[in-house]
Image (cartoon, rainbow over all chains, first blue to last red; front, side):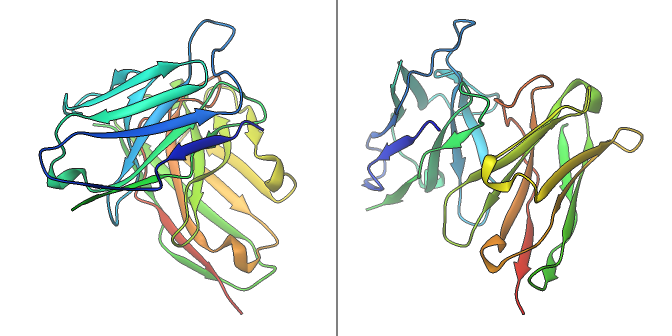
Length: 114
Length: 120
């Protein structure tokens, strides 16, 4: 199975400062159709996950433009340009390219305010 | 607006089965699929499998093969996930998420989650 590795595990950030989360896959996530199925999810405390970014860099409707996704092949990044208090939570990357066997998530990165 | 409303919390004994429902609204149910994802206490997300509401095709995570069955009832726009031979490490919050009709990759809307506790 494809292994998704996120870093760091924990990310203390000062309000208004940028934050960056890395996600690396054990295999290229480029699918035969040319798309790269790499999504990012946010899970606030006590809430269900929410998709922020799909196919590497496409923001979902209603997602603030301070969130951006980038990367290619096996290396991907989620950036928050200026962290706000509501951004506290755990962020997960997920690959949907290698199916079967199926979707795999990164271990998560906990964003907290310093 | 798209909504996925799941059934309530369950407490089960080891060896029993549980069936969680996920009722969809706000979109054409048969044009999409449903993935199921679980999260053990304090842990990350684990994909369990996917079912197409369009044609009934399924794909299950290898570690759950033989213990999980996913179905849909298109007349009520409801998806179901049944897990059998429950063990203590199946204790988790179970989520349904809307997915693509032809393969699991999207997970664009999520249900509120259903806590399943397995305890003797």
